[in-house]
Length: 343
Image (cartoon, rainbow, N blue to C red):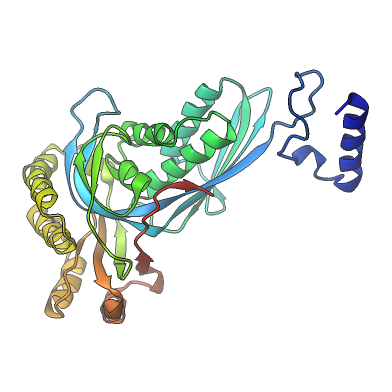
């Protein structure tokens, strides 16, 4: 395309889309230098990360390298999670705006960490708009922090054209979680999806996971009462000792016998051992126990969960609904087998 044709194309777009011309994300030309190319710098990308429910875990945060820090444990990824849209545009001065479910937030520390990491890698100044669409409760054992960080990392990698391998981009989310003390093993679990055992701690491609066979006939049923501060738990030495003494043995045993029944049974043993089951959770668990349904507590949140067959969903939903503070407290989701991904 010669310069005359290029100018004609630009003018045509101006005439057709006068109000949006300077918001076109795709370039019409390739191969021009900065003086001749009119390629606009604004780009928009979207990514999704599943939520995740952890049944039990062992804290492994002794290494200095955050890529080696993490947790061993077991949990399940769910089809409800966080969808993140990012819009980046070259600018004379860097600015970052983060929104959550339509509202501007100044408390998204993990997301801020991820954005700053990718801005450093991009090496230029940008206006960055992050929009998190969160479909899972926050701070309640559903892996919302990890899902937000992971979906954001994948989206920014694409938006900045960094072309990092998927697992390397996911590592940036893991590092942000570790440094902000909001999680240890959630990111690697949500990266791969399914019902997993985290047999070796660390970030994606550093840590190791093992899948537990589970069919699509199972549904993840949850009843959420409220949040528990993960940061407080991870920094409480007495609680950490209780977690690690029992959690590590359960991981080893489940790795030898990786079944759904063992996962649910070990999860319940872990919750009972830690002594963190609230009165509200206990009332629900007593009723589900009487009905022959194995449930446990999500780590870490005041949340009851179970994996049940589809023909049991109605019964579980009825029990959960009797105890639920609101209709939104009962959450039913499929197992997400795909893991975090670009949209």
